[in-house]
Length: 432
Image (cartoon, rainbow, N blue to C red; front, side, top):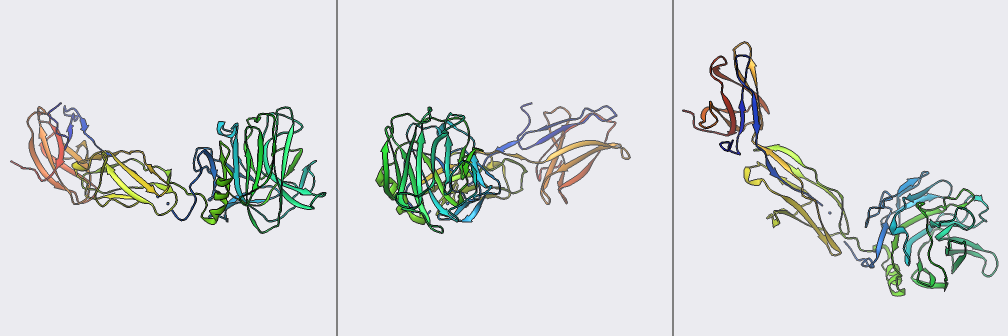
């Protein structure tokens, strides 16, 4: 079989008169990919294991822990940094399936928060003025079920008003609670951060440490989802009524300087390295045709694109899409796209373009009693058709220029004569 040239598609026919039909297509391989996002921002601190910016969905842009918007919640409201989650305080919330990264020994949770109302309907015994913003359960099935919670309470004693709260509890139900000195107003964006250290917790509001205390027990978690805007507990809940933006979880204690820097970044937010949302897809195309590879990418602008073939940069290929026209055999190979910004880079997976000279099939033209060869390729391209009786010596039959993507050519050689193999390649070819 080594007599077959990779530029050809070969056919042998066994028509009713006694020919064997046999098709051999040797394919050429090609690959490609694509990607895209910058501004004045603060680099994301180390240890970031979950980041839900609320940009049209509940996806995690640093991991794979994507969430679901529930009860009419949306993520297309104009927020503090781009878009934000919008929760109505009655039905809306977001949930993210449990993950090992949601069970850190020490952690920091931070977000931008905007209240549309300070009151939402009470569920069970939850007192007026409460609201649950970010919530993770502990392993208890009753009583105190807070693994950790960032929320709002209503202080009716020391300084009347609504304050932010941060709390953790143990497997035995011991609760440690903090509240802010900042009083909450509707229509205002606040940056909050709750920190759990080896033996302490802290609550920051707008970059300032407002409360801290000691903790004498380890963190305790269960396998229920991470929740935004609710406890998910039917006997105790006040849903959050407002907007939530840039929710982020770190698997370590952030320093006061790091929290202050996150607040100071303002509407620029944390810097976002490029992230591939969709990978390019493989395709099958013919010699002389065109192909386009694309991918969806998010990140901070400006983004720089660089398409590569077998690790070498393709000159001028600096756009999100790679367009190859008039494909030739030399275009075959592995392609990928490198996307970079000031915060990092991402490289797409290689994809395959299967390239054919043409497709050819054979049938009997019953009226003429000859072989009918159907060619599928590119209109206006010229293909050379050859035949052989032994797969060793090939003779040119015709040069066929396709007038449409599919054409039929009749071999004048009578089907009742000796068997023939056929192959098609790039034309024109010599015809004896």
